[in-house]
Length: 203
Image 1 (tube, rainbow, N blue to C red):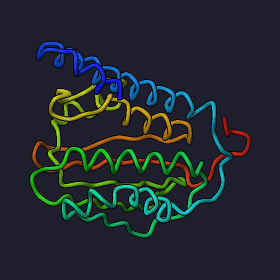
Image 2: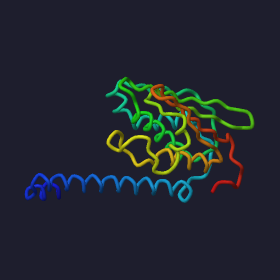
Image 3: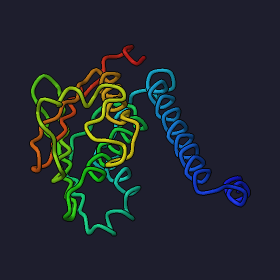
Image 4: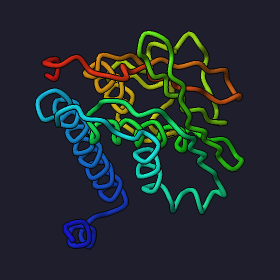
């Protein structure tokens, strides 16, 4: 509404400046939201309990139903072993990883596969694999750092905090997250989490 009122008294240069201000404000709002989400991982959390990662991954995928339909994409979610975790945070982790895969897709229908296997020493490894644009392995650690971007904002929107939040969630659960990729050949994100959490370790 403000933009409409102001635009009536602006010349072409004024319109350009106004758009810059509005876009900058929108990016700042998104950045603040992401920083708040990051801080909440430890400060606002739910107790660990037995959860079904397959169900939670499906709920996370449902958010992207429209874009999957528009792009002719497919998200395949296989059976996964139960783990003890914060359900809300694991849902957020799946949302971020699925959203990341859809954002960095190629000019073909996106294909995302989510599956897991239980390792020895009580570890569950969850894999989120896509057929997107991929990236050079030299950036496999950098992408998890705050505000790090491999592409310009003009190419892909975002604040560079999504994968940082994923790492924070994995670490809060006593786990890790890593990535393997190759340019033009998709990526695979690997989340390693304890099947059972040690009592009294929920922080």
